[in-house]
Amino acid sequence: MPKKKIRSYLINIAAALLVFSVVYLALQLGWINSYYRSILILICINSIMTISLNLATGLLGELCLGHAGFMAVGAYTAALISLNSGLSPYLSLTLGILTGAVTAGITAFIVGIPALRLRGDYLAIITLAFGQIITILIRSLGFTGGALGLNGIPLLTDFPLTFWMLIVTMYIVYALIRSRQGRAILAIREDDIAAEASGINVTHYKMLAFVISAMLAGVAGALYAHYQGVLTPEKFDYNYSIDFMVMVVFGGMGSITGSILAAVVLTILPQLLYGFSDYRMLLYSILLIALMIFKPSGLLGQKELSQRVFQRLGRQLWGKKAQTVPAETDIPTTVVDEDTYLTEQGSGDSGVGGSSTRGQENLPVSGTPIAEAEGKHQERLGLDTQGDEPLARKQKGRR
Image (cartoon, rainbow, N blue to C red; front, side, top):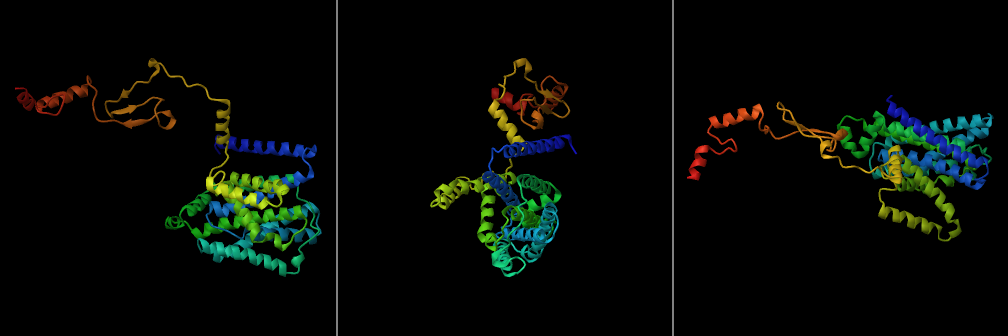
């Protein structure tokens, strides 16, 4: 692995450790009370869900309107394991997270077999129907608690667990997109017909992204079940899926860090507007409409908050060194090669690394052997050495 990439990974890990240490220390010292701690946990869970939906919608390019159904599968699977396994709390939580992810992935595979062969609105309708079917099944089955739901789920989800699960989710999606499979997924997003004509198995890669997206949603559901303690079928309805779709669009379709920013804003905003209970949803809607008018691509579009962005921001905050104009003796001169007639330019010119080599017109420099030979050749042909007009015609014009 290149040293530059290793250094980038180390910087990212150090940044995550720094953020976690600051927030965890504030929690331990009591600077953040239990109410805001619950909001932090909910932000991490919503961020995982938003990133998972962004993988299917923003990076794959397929509109999924029933993503809360996969979250419900993971949540009920993990809750049933914690309530009926008889294992220790944290062992049952670990098993519930893994089982919830696998169950949601299997469900996505079953749904994706007919759905992913369709395009556009048809896929959106199928995923919407799937979300409604999951809600009806949960309400109808006895072991899921029916319409009453499940109660007494151990409250095992805390901030460290959700924070590091969010970091793992970011790494999984980022590593996937940077891989060969990820490039195929992005090619399908841009033009699935051209990708298929190029030899990409469109159905296979659609299924891969769809299943991974559902598995991450299952992880978020397992964390949510052990955060809330109570599960009801009405929670995972169509409106809940639309909430996550709004977060994806708000942050930018295709941006991982944009999904996190949108989850932070749209999780905190309803809490801040509780004082305006009569106008809370109105203000919420106006904010979204304004964003779509003035920033239709979302907060970040398809860009990411990378190390380069913070480095550029730091240079702007602390200022740049003044650029001095070089003296005449420092200005690089043009060097002409008599064989190839290529001009090598100095560091002030454009090009990779500040210099470039480009072909010039085939005009020999006067005083060189090549110029003298060409002048003699023109005299033999009866041409003026300063142009291509015959000497006889020039002399006739002078008379």
